[in-house]
Image (spheres, chains in turn red, blue):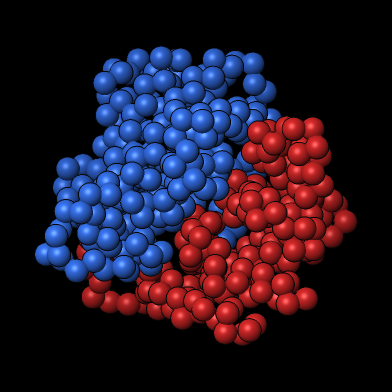
Length: 196
Length: 228
């Protein structure tokens, strides 16, 4: 149980996927412009990450048993792409309400490095099934926290005046991301402190 | 497709349409691996090999690929080249392989590569595609090298592992840490904005999908149009 809690807290706060592992930065910077889009994207990311971890776990065992470990990258990306497409079709047909809020973000996620990243990290850390799911969920929640915090910061930037011309737009967004990222360093060491 | 001079295609990727600083693609690896100059070079060259390979392969099969399933096919081709590069790195450059960690397999989802497949290789000849891949790859490598050098020199006082500042500047660990990555990248983009616009560069103004060169690559994705 303690192990699970450690994985969860470190995935959410200490090793935040976006701000300290740099996975999913593109969508983080792209979508964080509005809070509602951020929420929709985060929901889709949590959903797909957990699903992808659950599906890639047995596939990885299969690959290892047949000494096909070198095919991991190809198989994972194809499975994730097919999975996302499949989920999109199912949701569109049976849950139109959910589709209108999450569905539009699903295709965007296929080539999001955070999803493939979490599947590969689960293998690298040799997590078992439960640990993989918890890690994926924690990573998704960490993504949500980071993107929502940053969406708030960006609203302030949009209204700010006096930004030097060269820094307007993308550069000031990156500098702001840097400062938000510093704030997550306050959590370093929290895992050791909490679970001793 | 009109004939373009190969030199122009080559330098296009390095300067005018530099994938990282001008087109703002591939931000994740740019930020993640540039803690040291040598990692930047390793990542850049690995991506260059994949880019050239996938551009050539996709250009060869461009007439055979049905339009509706082109993205999955491109991703498979790219993943195959990534696997090759991964195995080569593991065999001949193990320290780089370890330093890059999961970012080596994650070249598969590097948007630069898919964007070039979609925007260039699927429309141009094999030779031009190879040159484009080389130019884009080297443009990517240059930026990674510059960022890696800045972060390593300021953050650790070394360059490619050799001590060079000799205590003239106190190493600022900030630059090695993730926030430093965002910070240095922000400064570099600002410099390109400042000096580049005068020389006719057109840097992307935001991370929105409207300005994204691979907008059409996001297969049947409407998220770009729906939010605003």
